Image (cartoon, rainbow, N blue to C red):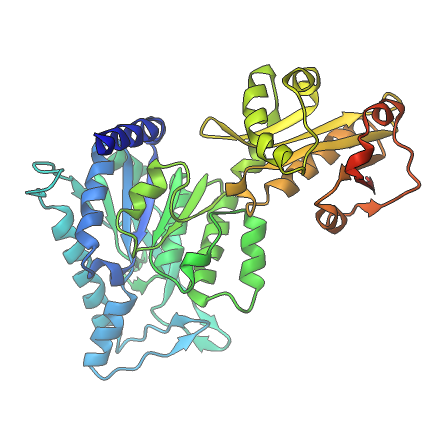
Length: 432
């Protein structure tokens, strides 16, 4: 019975995501390493489920490992420049053979009726074609990259027409030029370009990189750029982050990196609040909004643990209701996950930065910085030159963000009457 209750709760929790994802476009890149693994059939079932839930799917595959195997059989050693394989005339036929082999294997499994599975009897209508126009990379660092190419154009109108008819699009990492040449394309770059051309709702990378278990749940593009610049970042992961940033900057709403070793990782990432991979987005910043009276309960639930630990001053429901017009919140899937208040003094000489709180699951997501920027923006809009904050635990965070600890600052009169001397809060001031 308990197991049944858990299943019911999971399904109820998934329902909002099922509704939200319907008729949305997802671009999914699968590494060829995973395509040959024991867990691959589970992903096939999951893709069939997404298709039958009304999600528009564009599936791409990589071919790097299979190309290595084919060239090794011919005793051909690839040369690389900037981590890009130089696809010369000698190796090109074997590269094409490897790519087509991966495509055929993937196509055959996506065409199965999935007998003896929860998706028994279901079929996927699969379409592939010359939707990608390629062009040569040319000469880089004095080296002719030959048949190594980049994306010139995506026939997005044709792809969208097929998606509207509930076809699943299958693309390989290969492009054809207008002069009939064939180019080996980087799969991650191709996936990003396709997502951008289609204005996809999600770009999803399913592959394994080093230290994947230690990655943040959510990253902003600025955090991704910092990791790209970090010499300790794994090269494969760095490449994914570069393509993710390009996609988000081109208005792809979210990019997800999912470890291929997690069974059901795609479903967990898409249909649970906490997911299981890394999501890259700037939507949190775009999603900051002014709070309203209906948010009071959500704010109280967010700040209560921080109040109990003495990090925040206790606020009653009545006080929150009176101050709600000063609050900004970030909401995710119906839950308030972050908030801040910017409360101006009557003289408009100062504003208090108060009640800055981020849910514990999102404290590595840069939301605190974004809320601080919003508070500063609001203060500047009212010609308020300084903001201050009272804190007992987070002095260093505020100093790192431009605040200065001061003992000379006189609190506004209304604040002096409510100031709790026993907390011994430090006063931090910032000129804006």
